[in-house]
Image 1 (cartoon, rainbow, N blue to C red):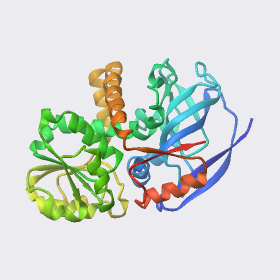
Image 2 (spheres, rainbow, N blue to C red):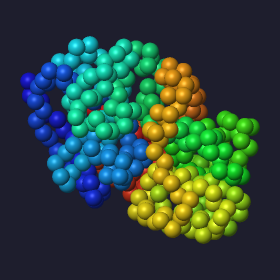
Image 3 (spheres, rainbow, N blue to C red):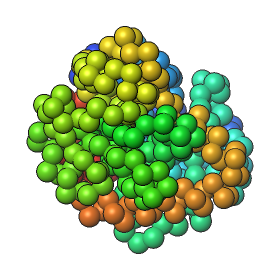
Image 4 (cartoon, rainbow, N blue to C red):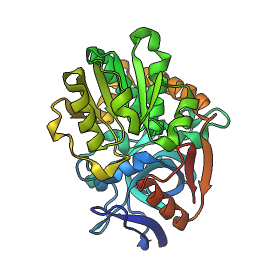
Length: 360
């Protein structure tokens, strides 16, 4: 059986240029599975995937003809066809997908909880992205939680991993934790996690954000202090600080480094929501890129898969309970809506209180 697969393509070196394309998808061969993508989240995380697609090989997960790429997303799918023993047609999975209607994978390492895409082109890529969680206990979410999972889980795991990293490094002996792009869901997840354990670290958590988002960020109640980007020079305390950069605004990072000098103990580079002035940190000797999967793998190795999943799932559901009070779910159903929303997100023109779910 042949089917038409519609996808949103993004030009790798000019990510504001996108195109909706259709292609034929052939039937499955032995070991292959076709997944029908049911729904997925669109967040600033996907902008980061596009911006650093070459450096972290995000373009390699779902190959496309040059100069195009398929930006990865997190979501749910249903097995449409299967020629892999142990993977049944009709079962539901959660995992990593392209912005497409379908994804064909070569399934392997099948167990009761998950299976993996063992395609040759994914062998050198982080295993956390190649694993598809199966229907059952892992996907048995509390009522009302499911649609928040693809919006918050990938971002929250980054937030959780950053918190683990800061703990391991004793916050670089800093008094302040400065978080840029404070309205982003990854930043809010980190602020939430730090607030929950504030009695253990007693750090002053400062959120930096744009003028239009100041009130929203304050209303979440997750930061000790919220500062407008335009007021950074006057209001950021001159104290030993570790900075977690979700924005990727090189001009801001350099200005803060020049302002704080040796008091900036570490710049943890995570995201690129403001990609237009990225890669200006070469003059900042304490700047280091943070790759969350590395720390996530270390966490699960330390605690074991079962205990690690229990800890992170409990923390995630707790965050969702809080975040659902200020995240308004908005559903998109066409590729044209996806295209325009993704372009607006790249341009920084989306409401941080919105959580976008694309449904096929």
